[in-house]
Image (cartoon, rainbow over all chains, first blue to last red; front, top):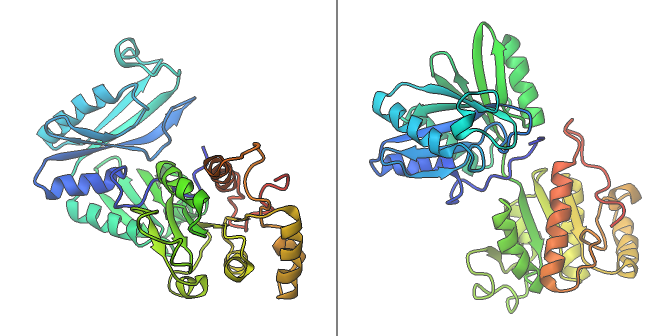
Length: 116
Length: 239
């Protein structure tokens, strides 16, 4: 997908995950940011997409259009707990596909880090 | 990533400056690179290319694995005319992820009641665009039918290289517009970039349907444009 210009909304918009992450963190919540860093095949969300998660499992945004968000939230809460970043991979080739695969047949790698 | 860096990143994005967030996937460290900043070696080449294409991605450079998240300014739509079509276009554009603002010197049209939550300027385009210039990341839609209001911003948009320029009006209206603007110094080729009559040809009839046709045409111009950095060609020749 060509993304020469970003149409993700302005940084004050509630749909802007990075603005949400900043606001949550400044409000005193523990926050992790998950980012799609690589895709293969027909991945539903482009590289650079974000999911923002707090320590209670609240989240904003999307890394797969709903397919694997549940699993990412669980891992993100571990990242918040440990403070160590994690690389996740999802796809049909993965054995986790049974539980949380991408039904579209694509594969994605998601980097999850804590906002320090 | 540290909160201070996230805050700075969001500030750059709000100011419509292009930046790349570089994250070292090995040790988790990150830095913000501004467009135009010179970096050495393989990394410098990759960063320059990413700014041109706007594409995020992972690269191997100087023995490290780095993720480049490219943030170029969000595409903006400037609408000339606080008309019925604009009332439908404003919420649709927001849902599709565009910033949108409306300029109309006719104070009776440009009222906050009709455009709640929309950036609205009840002034002449000449005045507004002096302070808020058009750029390559902006689409311009001229919807007033009134040459006194529409002609100036149309010319300004073509000169600024806006990725989309469209104007409401019949083919006859547009023929007269061509005479005026070419007499005013635009070349025929420049004028040909104006999408007129505005909007994809989907048989739109109501103001809301015309807004869909305009938004679809703007998205087409954005997604199908030349990524080499050259100005977009004739937008939607068939329209």
